[in-house]
Length: 113
Length: 114
Image (cartoon, rainbow over the protein chains, first blue to last red):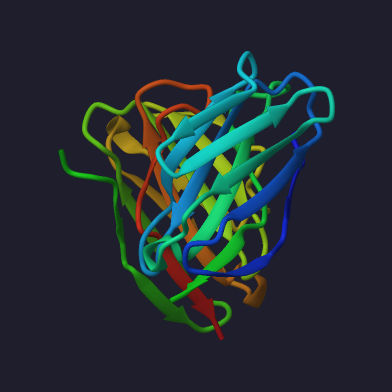
């Protein structure tokens, strides 16, 4: 199955700075890479995703980049705000099985006002 | 549109007891998934239903875990007998299509086995 590694496990930034979270995956056939945000007491919520035929995707202050050759993808948050504080998970589909999602270990982002 | 509902939100049980978690997916979503997150680890896949059928249960830890989805609506996940290592947050998600797209997660059930 797919193996997804995520770094860092914790990240603290000053409000207004940028935050970057990086993930690698093992299955070269994986073709879909979503990012989820989990706020306290809630379930993970999809914030952005990218498919393997695209190298970068942007939605306002968040962007995701994908390097298929190196098998890694990253989440970039610019102009961070306190409400960006949460746990972020990357994920990738498993092409060897039933195309289910496999997740990274999560990054706890703290934005300091 | 109502989201994915899970209950209970928290459960504390003693080792050896039985616990049943429930998940109500979004109406019309044929695909239902169970995941578990042990503290500090990844959100780990447990199993996938398509309607009432188990499509993939390769992530189920052992035979102490039993998932059902009678009638293709809500699903239950029973742990019997519970062990200390079963502690964690159990998430349910549903989607209209397969392939990892459009997952909507519930808020999870935090299970603590003491």
